[in-house]
Image 1 (cartoon, rainbow, N blue to C red):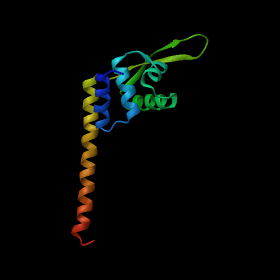
Image 2 (image 1 turned 180 degrees about the horizontal axis):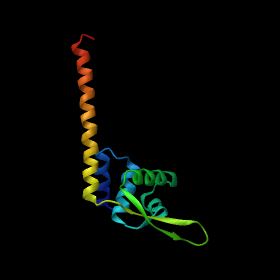
Image 3 (image 1 turned 90 degrees about the horizontal axis):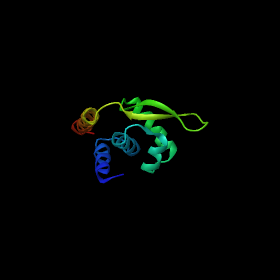
Image 4 (image 1 turned 135 degrees about the vertical axis):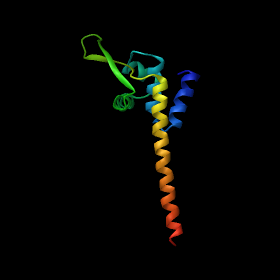
Length: 119
């Protein structure tokens, strides 16, 4: 992966995205119409890691299957594309991060109240 891609991966991780998901999403954003095998080869992730990342990214609505290609006599291979623009993805990640930050602040307040009540 390139330095630019590495920066994007780190930015996504800073917003609480799992490393494997960030690496897979960054690859698909940079390389539309990617197969799982291509993602595995370029990101240096193992097949189960890529499978889990693709599943989670599809559930989050960040990627989708755009086509199926047949390679030889085997099963058709899914082709993945981004389901949203980078700007939309960034906005969603920001919203998730802000929500988690609010939850953290509330947890801090709960702990502080324990101190005030004499515990």
